[in-house]
Amino acid sequence: MRERFAWEGLEAALVHRRPKATKPKKLDGEQEAHLIALACSEPPKGKKRWSVRLLAERFVELECAEEPISRELVRRTLKKCHKALAQGAVVYPAKARCLLLRLAHGGCP
Picture (cartoon, rainbow, N blue to C red):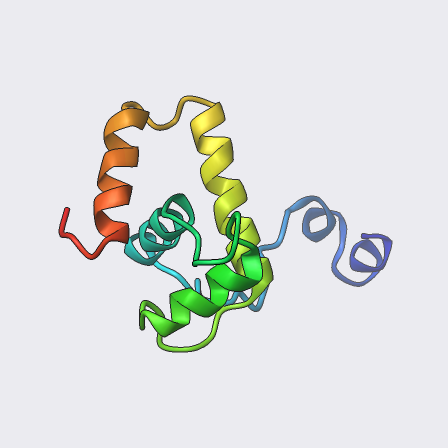
C-alpha cells in the first residue's frame, strides 16, 4: 500500500483493486451437487466411510468432471455445503438430501 501511495497517489492507495488473475471454477453447481450426493451415498465395499481421496477418484471415474479434481477441491466443496446447512441457507434439508441421494444413484432430479 505504501508503495502504491508513493507511485500512484492517495486515491489509488485507498481504492481496493480486484485481483488481476482469477481462475475459473473447476466445478459448476450441478457437479458440486453430484459430488455432495456421492459423499452422502454408501462408501465402497470394504470401507467404513468416504475419504476425500476416494471421493475425488470416484467422481472422475463416474465422468462427472472432464479432468481430475484434487482432494483439496473435494474438501472445500464439502466444507462449503456443511456451512450452508449449518447457517440454514438450505431451506428444506430433508428434501435436498433426498434429491442428492437420487442423484447419487444415477437418477434425475
